Amino acid sequence: MWYGIAADLVVAVHVAYVAYVVLGQLAIIVAAPFKWQWARNPWFRFTHLAAIAVVAYEELRGIRCPLSVWEEQLRLLAGQVTHTSETFIGRLFHDLLFIEGKPEIFFTTVHLAAFALIVQGLIMLPPRMFRFGRTAKTEPAPAAA
Image (cartoon, rainbow, N blue to C red; front, side, top):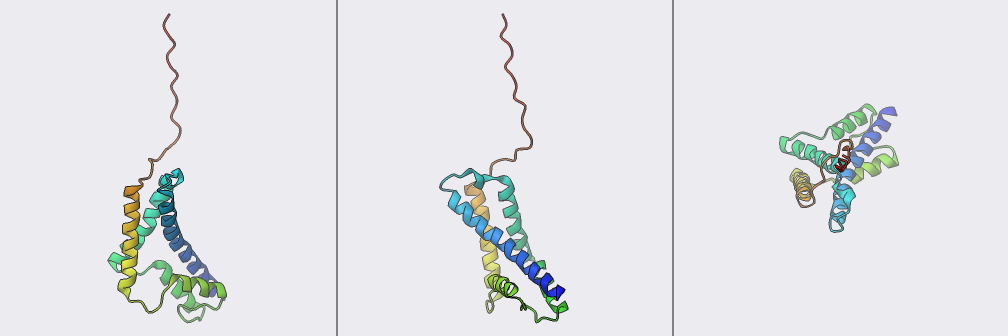
């Protein structure tokens, strides 16, 4: 039972990861024409880029997503058939994440296209520079009499 719950938790984290990439890019696209400053936050933009860069790297190197591997291993330990959950939430998250019957090239294309779109967004709406600490404001020198 606990392994099945852990597998559901892993697939929920996987869905959150994908949502961060997809919804984050959608938010950037919406914010760009309005020049909303939150969309230029470097912490958001570079973690967003890093999230999709990991996926693109895995695709190019032929590495299976560790979250998918962990979910499958936990399902096997729980005695469940791989890619199926005994809970409603587990099935819902899994069905949101995985599309059955598509060739591998479909997913590779989608992942690499998402990476290209996010890099394009960085070029077209660049993040502002990091700000570490406050700069001391200098007082003007007293006027000489």
